[in-house]
Figure 1 (tube, rainbow, N blue to C red):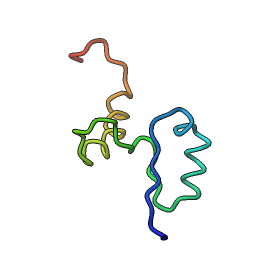
Figure 2: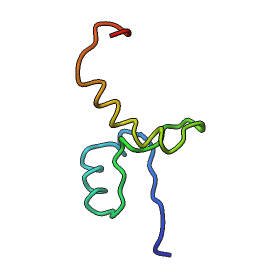
Figure 3: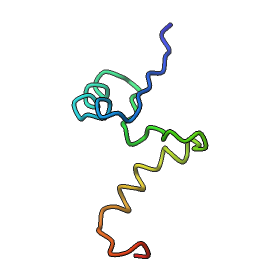
Length: 68
């Protein structure tokens, strides 16, 4: 049984920088925490695969209002 999927949730122990670095260095197809799906059963792979990227882009600058 060489093929397996190891998943973690967003608990602080799983998203801790040292844990993320270890997994990245020791797991060939590791997905960083930004790419993990949310807990919503309605989320499809495209929703969670790009969310971290988009959030990083939109949160680079402070906004003065919701409309900004």
